[in-house]
Length: 218
Image (tube, rainbow, N blue to C red; front, side, top):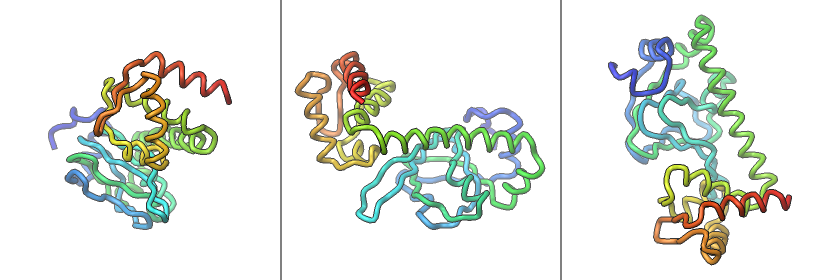
């Protein structure tokens, strides 16, 4: 491997992973883990993106997080340390390259390398904090608050959000009908425009104001 610079890792960590890990390719849409499966190793994404989500018995999904270049999977780390099965599902959202550190090497490096151990726990702590924020949002925020916050987060990448109502519903763990109804409300207010597979932010400041107002109501 000669592309350490492709991912934002420190040189010592990139060297450790490059030396001990296996380089794998996952095609867009490829399932990388299913609920209950044993974890095969510690993952670090090189390029692409992996979506980690939970699925209910009724088939409804909720996004837990996405793993981008240089990031690791907190649930995989937890499973490797606890010796338990993977509690969610993971799928490549685009063609993805990743390093997978086998279980034996992972445990050996955790015992022997302070640098690697610090990298694992700092990544774990950061991702766990965001997971707890997700739990709090699902438990305590209204769907209006959640969709406003979601749109504000997504429009940091541009004012045209290329997602269907179903994809937004999956991201928020809600029903498509509920999301469509809330988006229609925002459209009537002139905050967004809806097109097939897209949500266009027309009035960013109004969206921010709506989000603040919904928060203050609580």
